[in-house]
Length: 102
Image (cartoon, rainbow, N blue to C red; front, side, top):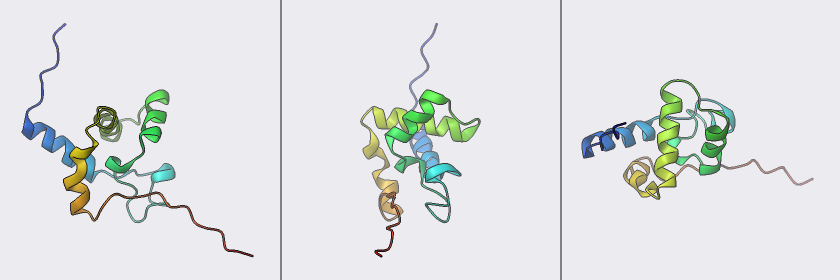
C-alpha cells in the first residue's frame, strides 16, 4: 500500500482557503446562531468536530472539509488560519443570548 503524496504548498494554501470560506450551514453553529452565513469551519470548536468524527461526517464537500479542519487543528496547526481570520476581522465566537433580569 502506497502512502498518499505529501501535498505541495499551493495545495495546502488552497485547502486552507476552502476551509476558511466554507460556513456551517446548519446546527448549533449554523446561520441561526451565527448570522448571516453560519460559523466558518476554521472557527468550529474541536469538540464539535470530534462529535462528527465519532458519529459520521456529513456527505460531500462539507464533510471532507470538516474532517480536514479537525486534522489541522489536532496537529497543532490552527495558526495556519491566522491570515484568514485577520482578513475577516478575527475569530468568530459563540455567544449565547443573555436572559433579561426580571
